[in-house]
Image 1: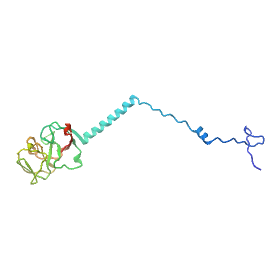
Image 2: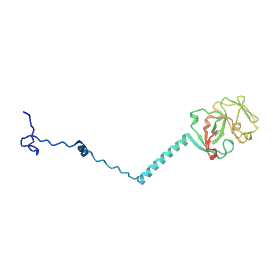
Image 3: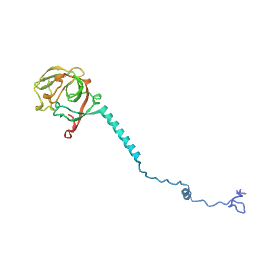
Image 4: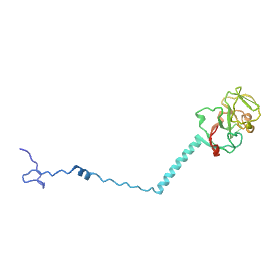
Length: 217
């Protein structure tokens, strides 16, 4: 004998006591009925206060990055005087890399910025001619390094002079520097070699005037 299940309170119970089962609802209809409503996404305009806050944040970040670059990496400077012509002209604006010599050594031909040995409150800009241990001699304007004439294409004939300088050996941790405009330059011929501790940057890029924009050579 098969068992039957009955529910006395069910309106679907037959007179024979058997449970009547209604037809199942289609799965798609159940899913549709059970799915939660999709919320609408509305585009809200930014309020004025929010826009100002974003702008102020970006400004502060930009200023902080600029300050870091100026303080630790590059410093804009103005050339005053004609001692480095024609490479650098009076009032020309350039960037000086203050970090580069922490990564690489000073080399012959570099244009360096340093504190004037006789008055450290002043800064000079000159070209490195002699390294430590080099034998330097100038005869009638011609520079000799370790007995060999130095080829100086950056000094046109109209910027040379006939000045001589006795034979010296550049001391340890020092550099012999000259201005490119030899007849108008106060340099190592006058104040001697410059100690490395006085050198704080390398001229790397000119940005004004526009026609001279580019790498400093």
